[in-house]
Length: 553
Image 1 (cartoon, rainbow, N blue to C red):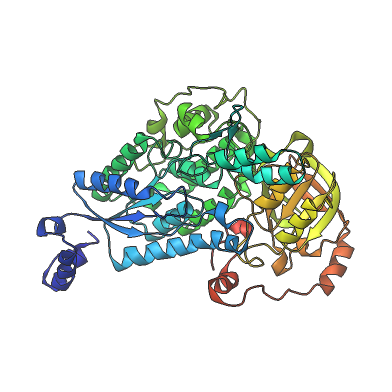
Image 2 (cartoon, rainbow, N blue to C red):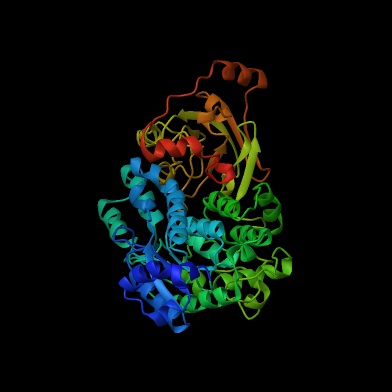
């Protein structure tokens, strides 16, 4: 075992002395040592109760003959970081999480790891660490927040209060309604209740085979979540005994499964950042150009908030991720022989699954859309690509042409939207917000919510080299690559240039001649970095493009 270097032989006496200082007895030093990564903190609703999940995991590990040893991981709340400098630290925290787990699990060679995850960058960061370390590992997530409910029966999620800001500023709702939405949109602990980034990645952890069935959908407040945590603690012991490692599970075929289910669910576009980054740590180059091919064969079966009126709790009651995968199985888009942490193959794991509500998980002959929920677009505006959550775009905006309204930061765009300077037909361009230019690739939820809240969601598009929250809906196109900071074509767009978006055709173009773009490129000058000290400055020097997962070189 990896821990033998701490526990076996005379040479390990100093290490055993330190372990005994923890209160471990000789009998425990004969057992596998399991690192339990506890992401609990008191600032993120999805993480506030993870101490209880941790205790359940510890019980499961101990029941199965292991010794659980807890150490921490950080987590940033994207909702709290939104709209200010804090959002620059959201995506970059993913790398800190992966690096810190690597450091802890290598300095203290555990035999296995239980990764207790919850919110947006914490989940992929822990999965990246699992792939990098390749030590027997399992993920157990916090579970989803319940949907809110207004007195008139309308159900709510975080995206509703984000959009209500624009609606209230535009005089479209009353102060009383605004306050009711604020007070009721986030009613419990857990990851925000729609198919936002955290829940997208928690569901995809299950699809990748790194989490047990139910991980993505059991609500945070349900006792079933604690039972699942105990089962995860027991399951990691089987993985240790059989020496089943993350790279045995997270194969190329497993990532193709994740892309297929991503399309069926209509996940956050952030999944298009995180799946390539996790694959990279597993030694796999996941070219996102395959996403469109998978989307062509995979219908969009679910419309969860913000795309529709269903929530994660509804998906759980409808049969969960296993039921979605069972529905897809006849289409041949899944590799059912992939291994999972349960010890079963995907096919074995979903064999008994069934859809309990065909309005939440549609059958393949009656989908919400005959193509997958996410599309990758390319063209002279984004030669390396960009992404859009097709499932959350109004039908009339799937093809759109309009004049560019160009802003070099998020704040200027928001001022223009709230100031009534954006009109139907416009294409808002927010640049220099990419991985290097931001730095940190901020989420543009506030501008998209302002557009929706102002009643422009069916007539205005937004394009950025930044990214979007899973709570974003509308014609919001992100991850434009190459980004403006490295001289990508998005840096050359001028006010009033016509931009054409064709989501079904997977194209995005600025309608300017090659000669004119070449003239503009000849006079373009790189901008001085916005941040020159600290972690963000180091990050900006090392980070790659959004379409490669924003991994560090």
